[in-house]
Length: 374
Image 1 (tube, helix red, strand yellow):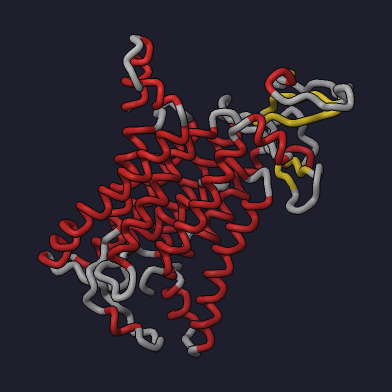
Image 2 (cartoon, one colour):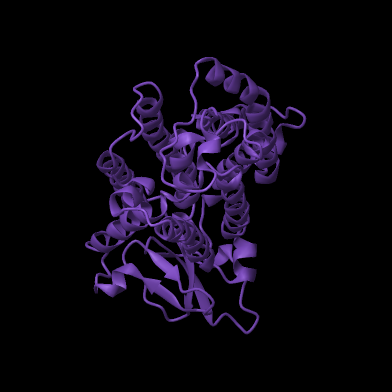
């Protein structure tokens, strides 16, 4: 919200107001603000959780050392959630479709996680929210995010094509926005809403979801794209949920993923950097840097209390929306290899935990419960 105030002050030639026009300046303030919110108010929230005896409820799955965490305050995800939303609302442009999508997904999954923690803590039900309801919530937000990215008119990318390229419907030339080919302009740039993914580690090799089903008019490509989004959401979203409980692991890995995505968001939304690094230019995606900075700051601030020995766990209130935030941040930038890398890492976390649990000779029902699916 502050960006609109300072845009108005800049029109009045107010000294220093123009700084808010720089992404790096607003991202820095978002990072600092999220750290302040998480570290200053985090201690007060932990005291409230301790006073209300909102402790971690441990199911005995036969894993070594797991019972030592019993009684540690949970629902600390409230700290992360507030540390993300407050800086984002203050420093990001709230009419940006990517920011709106991230706020919606964060709040949606935060509410589902809160309900799960509430049932576990206050209703004394160790199972929490039934797995089928969690999956329904994840499918719902997956449909919404996939639909926004596929159908919304503001979701565009710039692609470099040959000079004789025939424009498709809803495409236009935007060559003037990009650096020119030194060899004499053998290529041009077009703005398109096609859902295209760059195959990792292979130059100029792009995969188009519409091409796969022969739908260049983009009428039926959503039948493929949205289910893929839903599948990835369900497959990856339990990564942080399963790692929460080991001191600092969930927040630490989420912060690392966030830093990588911040770099990717910045270069993908900068025309010259995108040209130089040979990645697609994504207009308006620079505002995601603000959200990511708040996300990273929230994770680092929460890590102060979550590192060994943990004073608080994020619970499902934090783990669900942290996993979803790091996941949904990748969909706008799925045009390059880091999407597959970070999704692959999150998937490896799930598989590693499943194999460790399987090595403990857990019954199939208990393994499903540990993974959050029942």
